[in-house]
Length: 368
Image (cartoon, rainbow, N blue to C red; front, side):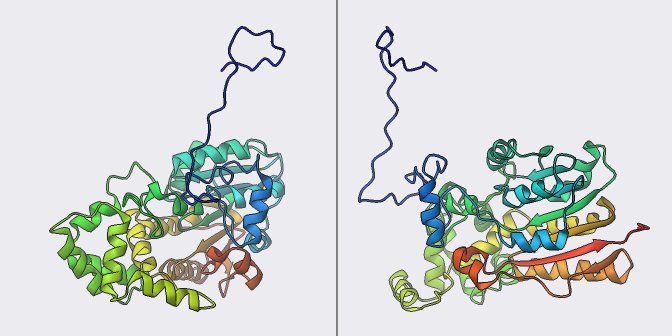
């Protein structure tokens, strides 16, 4: 890259910075147009402004229940922590502060783009960090690569990150039109569109009900099968339109009702999109494997903590922790989930459905 010479002695023409794309109105609306939010180092006032309004800057993620996670998992100097869903690195940064230069953080994530960005951010932290593009179900293989028999803390923040939701190219949001992808890991073969166009009406209906408690699951599944015979699903907007039709409500009517509500209504498409995303990424299957293998990966006295955002996930975590306490594998576990306080929900509305559970491995490990 050519350097700019301000002395006037250079024979090279001055290098012009590329102009940002123009947009209609006084404020950028689309994800790509929000150039200040994508460069918060250059525009720090933008971050403060958006956080004060309870919004998440585009391309970032606000970690939930950070203080509660640290208080319960109690990371100490020199310990080894595996952050199974490092994402933007919010929780990881806090772990690093406590384990210090003699500790080690092992960061896992399946999203290659976000993993690389977080690698660059955490490289400035005061502790060794290893990065692996891996699903948390592969934690045992990662520990083996690190030549470790176990770790002191396993942490997982389930669900989808704000960076993935807000980017229309990922196809996870019902708010903006985009390709109906929904894959957290682009190495997966099937997209959301593939499943909508292939699965039977019965399987779609069951998924919407079992994975998201969608009460209109049967009608939504019926309309999906009916519509795809004429035009296969490819865009998020197509699925949103079908959901509104199945619920017999127009977008204009819903928007009016939502504005009139002080607390706000859940978007009609929210549950269906959640169920399809869980299905595409086999999130429950991966969680079951993590819960199964975790006791073998923890050192004696080690701690595990999981944040979930869906009742099905929370039930799996609760049952696993309780069963392991009953079987004498875990010494103790949270009796009730820890949830965000009103102050956190107001500053970060996406934290509202979060539930955090923890468990502690016995001091002497005798797992059969």
